[in-house]
Length: 191
Image 1: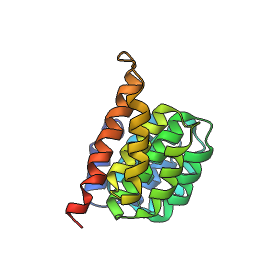
Image 2 (image 1 turned 45 degrees about the vertical axis):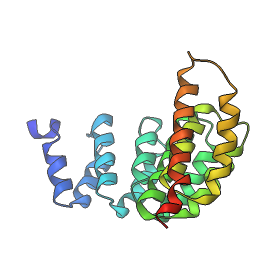
Image 3 (image 1 turned 180 degrees about the vertical axis):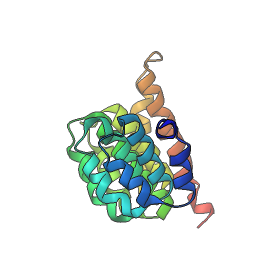
């Protein structure tokens, strides 16, 4: 009974590559929300592609959706269409930001540049919230691509014109854009 409350069995199942055991626990009604979040995190870390259907199902639960999206970011390219859709259509900014982050993870892990165009479209959309834009900028930096350089410079120019030192969201966005420019603009050295 005590083992049911500790993370050790979960960590052990993940270490041994037993995604099936973790997926079974995810289905159990007796497992708490916090524990389900931990399980989804471990499935993502394991890059357990077989978890994708369960993670999609978890999107229906508002409390689990963000972690499900973040975990999808560690899986195969199969999650890209869903993440793009969530980034573009979710009414929740937190979900849009998590989807952008997930796209950056997939692009970075798999070297898949197919996520660049949807991210650039979101970057250039004037209606995109700054918190979402921050994750989009970070994501573009994880997938160095020449197509990102000019849009990032354009955004940087707009942001530098805004003087608001107390605005932490703006500060984070500026940092993300600056870092991503450095990642994308120096990529030519390696290719």
